[in-house]
Length: 214
Ligand code: AP5
Ligand code: MG
Ligand code: ZN
Image (cartoon, rainbow, N blue to C red; front, side):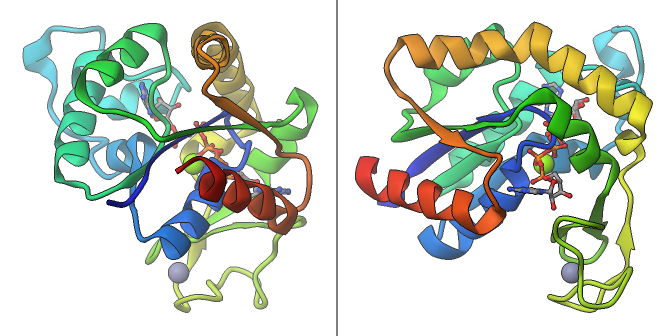
């Protein structure tokens, strides 16, 4: 049985970066609501009669997509996975409760990064449009500018990585998701990792924690 891993952290904390390594090392699925929603930004959700009719309208403003939409994505992805690293969910206490009803977690990781570091990580991020690999123009540049080291694909900047939207995402995180971190901390499950180290140093701690707990 592969482990069920939850990775928590603010926007830009390094969840996606570390999840790629967890997938390679532990053979689990990367279940990420952000990527799933980005692939379905134009999906018609008008039948739910909510504020907006597509996920993209929430995302481009840095707001949370409604729970009904996100819970359904997670239900399906987790039921099909033999071990997973869950990234981007739960983002509020209702989602955390939903998660506790559908699965058991072996490891809960929290990447601890100070807020003033996050904005520069987000505005400098570049993502491969072919394979999804993540780079940073200063902290983790590709060998050739604009080109993925892994697959040669073109790199692009996410629409929600403008400075204004990045700041709003961090505000939404503080309000909605910080209580989720406290919830897992109080239950004694949370493994806090210093996310301000280099990506390789963070990985050393992440790997050791999973091996220890799973
Ligand atoms: P999502 O895609 O989940 O975005 P996020 O939580 O804001 O997180 P990021 O992907 O921005 O950060 P990350 O921690 O993965 O950092 P990364 O590894 O890339 O969600 C997007 C939107 O979708 C939300 O705003 C919302 O609208 C919607 N959504 C998603 N899930 C939802 C849910 N459950 N409920 C409701 N709505 C939902 O790293 C960032 C940068 O830093 C990169 O450039 C990287 O190279 C660099 N970096 C990484 N590690 C280091 C390091 N150690 N040192 C220096 N640089 C580093
Ligand atoms: Mg991410
Ligand atoms: Zn690539």
